Image 1 (cartoon, rainbow, N blue to C red):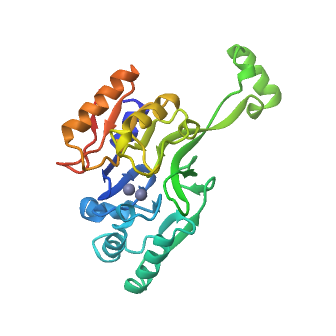
Image 2: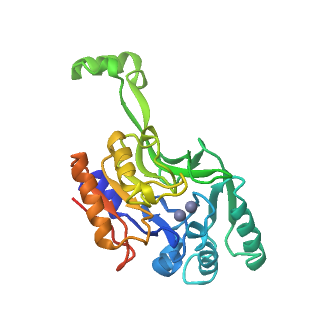
Length: 292
Ligand SMILES: [Zn+2]
Ligand SMILES: [Zn+2]
């Protein structure tokens, strides 16, 4: 199984524009957005979640929070396990939601922290060498929205030493130490756009999985410049040289066949072999449907 297939096998979620969007990545204990239905779908697996990363305060991305927090306070699981909710600093909807939660759930049994976050910040993860990098997205007319990249710190041989033989490498390591030969870099594993116009490809460079919103099939149906189309999201994925693409946040104005046909023709027109998936749940909420 390739790395992107492994990541996808551990990722589940639900997404329909204006209804609900959330994705759960189990190995890093993170939930990306918290639309309605998270706790009813995951049931006691909500206890695995240690961090919720909110892209913005629209209802379809945050309406699951009250139910989630209630369930985590009272159902079968470790109700004392801490929970941190990261959100774009200054988001007025989330500030209001936070006040409401403080009234309805004033003393949760678990430590609950709300952490206002800006672009270019780093969020630590429980897995060694992994963290989350935040980046700005283009969605709200007033206020900031965020995307999130789960990245892994890796080390590699510096380019200038690529031509050395194994014997020469051993000699240099003996003389100067391993750090002299290697450099660390950040490998994008999962990049999540939240709701946004197309991401700059540099933000998703060589990601294993790019989760990019694709609300529209036809750019003519977009009134405001706040969402992406299927063709635009695919272009980002190709330019960023990602290993796989998951399209989400499709509008319910389209039927399932329209969505599948539009994605297939965009893929054919681009002449790419990129594995493309989409979430368009009319059946099981956790199914990603592969196009090719
Ligand atoms: Zn949305
Ligand atoms: Zn939105």
